[in-house]
Amino acid sequence: MRRFCSSLLPVLVAGLVLFAGCDSGGGVPDDLGASTAVTSSAESDVVLGEGEGPYTFDLSISDPGFKDVPVDIAVDPSGGATLGEDILFPADTTIRFPESATSGNSRSIDIPIVDDESIEDNETAGFTLSIPDSVDAELSGTTSLALTIENDDFFEVFADAEGLTPSSGDTDAHCLVQRSNGEVVFFNSNDGGIFSYDNGLTTERSASNLNSDISAETNTIDRCDGVAKDNNENVYFLFRSSENSSGTDYVYKLPASGSPAVLGSEEGLNGVAHNNGTVYLAGVAFDGAPEDGFFSVNDTDEGQSLSTVVTGAVDLVRLDVDSNGNLYSFSGEFGGSGRNQKIVRVTDPSSSPTIEEFADPYGAGSPLVAGQGDNIGDIDIVNRNGEEFLVVFNGSFQATDGEQWASIRIADQSIDLLFNRSQLVSNTPAGDFVSGFTEPVAVNDDGEVFVASRAASFGGEYYLAKVADMLP
Image 1: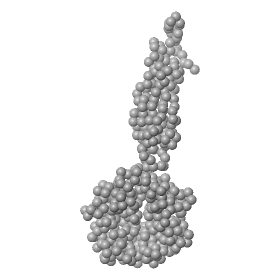
Image 2 (image 1 turned 90 degrees about the vertical axis):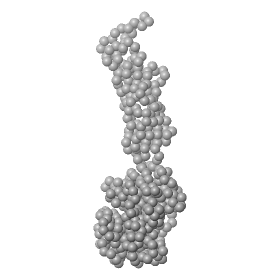
Image 3 (image 1 turned 60 degrees about the vertical axis):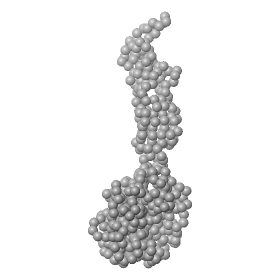
Image 4 (image 1 turned 90 degrees about the horizontal axis):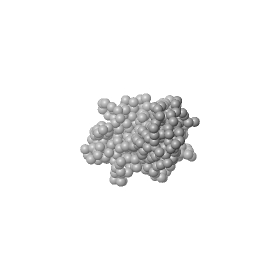
């Protein structure tokens, strides 16, 4: 319905008597809305994260003059943003100020942004505002808007090759674990020492000191078969020498303060975890362990013999423990008893331990791709927003886009792909990726995943990547 003034004044135009309308002040304009204008408050360039939308701006009208004023908004998604998937906005739309509009009326425009779980490059959509030529009205303010969506699933180089290079010049990093202060601790197999990185490289234990600590081994320590950390920031490694044909692993404690200790040794160990004063170990008989199964030592005494926790037909690699004290490990190709290529769990390991199948990482519907051998090269348990997850590194050569990182929810064993090698490489400003041969991943309860790329001789660069906001 058309509005009317409280008093209409006659105007003589070409012998006809017309009645003039009101402007925003309630007076009588002498131009019948000839100065109609729409002003946009939009910014010309806007950058928002996926979870920061919607982007909102206003259109306001002045001197409308009793006429319908349409403002067309055309959308150009050629910058990569997909309408309906990344941005919930129609391809083209029209915002109308009706004849009843008064000067100063405004319309709010929302451009909703979808917070999806896919990993993408930054995406842009262009928005162009216009008023049809047939309408006598001006358009001012920003008439061309570029809205860029930054992917919140975020990759960065935490430490590059230069930052990781020790005085020896022999760069490498694997067997990763993160302390609560943020520094990532790792073993450098090329140098032979233990280092940490946080805004710079720190020598935790030099190669010569490490070899002196493990005096029972006459050959050079150059392999790490597992790593764990306790709540007091002590770090536990499984070290050995590739020159030792027996493959003896040494359970090595690097304390937060004080002198290192060798808690025990055994052949064929392939994983280590810590819980409540106990260091748990995974062993494989084929590699020299007394049996296939789980073993333990306490976390203080030196030179211990291993105690058996529970044994069974399992081909174990990697190990971690949840908040209830249950152990998780991957049973590889020679697992037997139907446990080949399965993740197994040991319930109540300190009292009445039982081995059970926990999850099939390659079952129907899983995004993970199986190959042969010990594909799951790392398992880290993380508590995120009140839920616990296994974060696993899948080193299968059969995966189309290379190695895969995924989460397995402990509550229901649901599996989500976090990212793959191709996504890591395309989103990280470093050359290629070559995985560490043992435990190249560390995860914290903030959902940050640290990944080590090693062996630059294979075409990649040495670096530590940090990948954030990936967990479901």
